[in-house]
Image 1 (tube, rainbow, N blue to C red):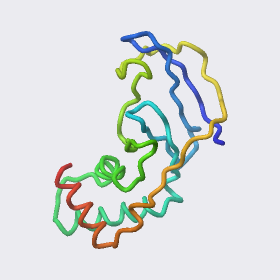
Image 2 (image 1 turned 90 degrees about the horizontal axis):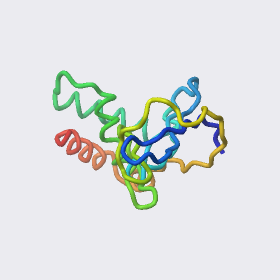
Image 3 (image 1 turned 120 degrees about the horizontal axis):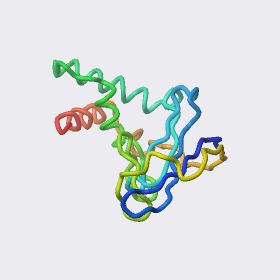
Length: 151
């Protein structure tokens, strides 16, 4: 169970109330990411996640070996790291996506809260990497190289 901040906002399109979840401002290295097409949250502690550390290092190696210039390592990692994560409920994890309305799927919300912010305890799925960890380093680098080409 994680203690998190919850804000309730209304969708501009359909006026459905949606919960936005946030970690404490001091939760360094921890992150909530989206899945289920941008409608649900999962948790990752990137400082303790060995696959994340390895992925960053391998991505850096690929960028250097390909002599890519003007690249922002962490923007690239944010865009492609989901491929190293196992699916949750049959959907990919989204590291750089926008929260979508639970009802209509739009991502435009009122700026004023519909309810005051609250602190709640929630059981969130944690990001795993079982499939990714079965690959050799050479296979991982090849996959990252291909993902960077599509980036």
